[in-house]
Image (cartoon, rainbow, N blue to C red; front, side, top):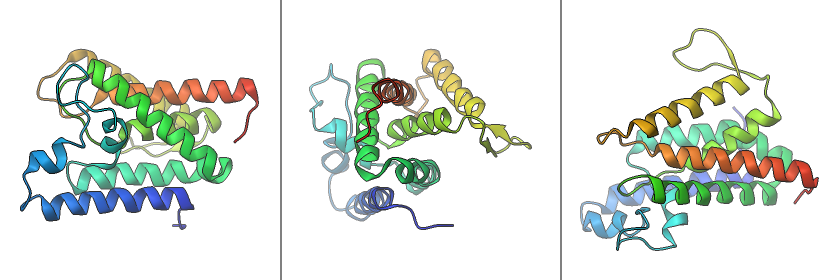
Length: 196
């Protein structure tokens, strides 16, 4: 258990504060006013605003949603930030999150919240950088190489997104958009040999 690097720590704090504010003030403020204006709506609706492509990343449905996303951000994002540095990581994170939002608002349905699209981009970057690192994925009883585990996550999101289950609360197209963004940015940086 190591202290996360600065950007990861700040992102965790901001997400936790946003979740706290929603739970504290949600009783006294109209839910639609507090969450609705900051969630990401499909571009075809009158509720969409461009700023939502950023704000939706900092909202979570409940404490378990927050903890799951922040655990992934801490585990994989810390490695990438330490390797890249703060500036390069934050550019990557927000680029993946925004592209994830674009995919969701055009292909998904209903309002979306959560950092998982951006985190999927980070997962892809980790998998491309450390493909043979072994991960323990519950409930699989044996370690799985990162390249296969992350490919499995993407395949599940693709199949689930295409299934179009109306009662599925997961923003699968945001995950896919974040993963694609992470892959393309990694290729771009590799080909340009550019470091921020």
